[in-house]
Length: 71
View 1 (spheres, rainbow, N blue to C red):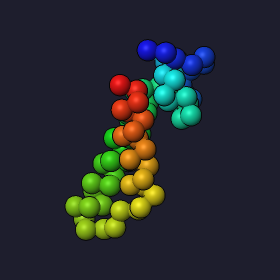
View 2: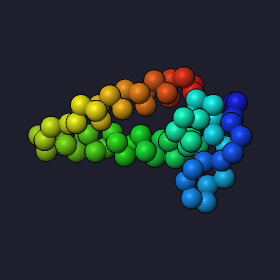
View 3: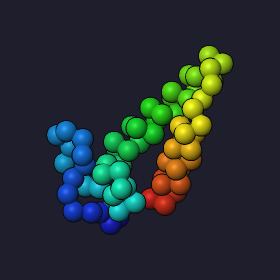
View 4: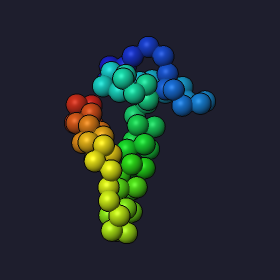
């Protein structure tokens, strides 16, 4: 896996940043944490029959594309 210089932007995290996550400045672990949190929020809103923010859906699609690129 190719990594960028520097480490994750999260406090006290010294993991390297994969090239595909360089724009987010996150290591894979923290990127996945954020992806799961956004997905969980959308699922909760859906279960409660509340609208899901269209921008949030677009961000989840971007997350999926980023993960595919990483793999």
